[in-house]
Image: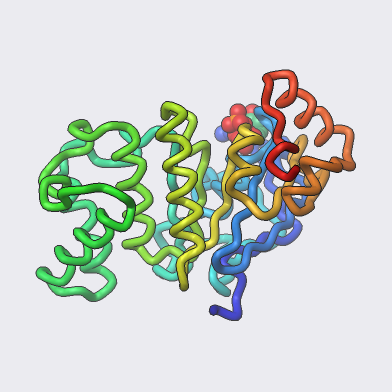
Length: 265
Ligand SMILES: Nc1ncnc2c1ncn2[C@@H]1O[C@H](COP(=O)(O)OP(=O)(O)OP(=O)(O)O)[C@@H](O)[C@H]1O
């Protein structure tokens, strides 16, 4: 296991056009760990993800530290980072995440070639990845373009691409919100499986869905107004929330009929 945190964020402050957006966010994820980042709309979840990915607007004022896999990348935009310091992103909108005009094969084989595999080995590797994310008939999938796949199949391909890139950490921003409940459960299980596998990436799981977070993650960070208000094991967040804001999140999930504490009963 790497001695470095897959993702370490320390006292991160981000301002945009003079407005404070993140106010001292800290988190640490070791390889294979799964952390849920929870908070209301506008609390700063996506901004935290963009900082980790190196995708903040160029005019953002940034203080604090972001390190990926031991590399200090606080002021490094995504494309100037070395490969091992690039998190992978799994988004809600898989049609936007994948190039609709290139085959899945092209998009999956490229990162494997960049990681040093020859043409044939990369194709075999792409087929292996497609099977690993639970899709059948890999050759046929390789020949298709993203609009020819279902939403669940596309999300599996996005996870396969994260694995192809050997990303140390996957940042998943509401990855299951656009899917039906059965496919949601399958994708959550897949994210659990790929992060649990030996040498698997860490996962920063950004969501409003407390139930999904409780199923998938070991720990949770609750943010409000760009600040961490509570950080604790997921079980404690659900069964004994300390902060008023966390209690509100749990209560509103309960009002929607989602009794997360049953998961830990
Ligand atoms: N480009 C921008 N310029 C100025 N403010 C921005 C910009 N993008 C986002 N914000 C503000 O930053 C704050 C945090 O936004 P962020 O997108 O991180 O929230 P979020 O928790 O991800 O919300 P949601 O769950 O709705 O996606 C919000 O107040 C938002 O209005």
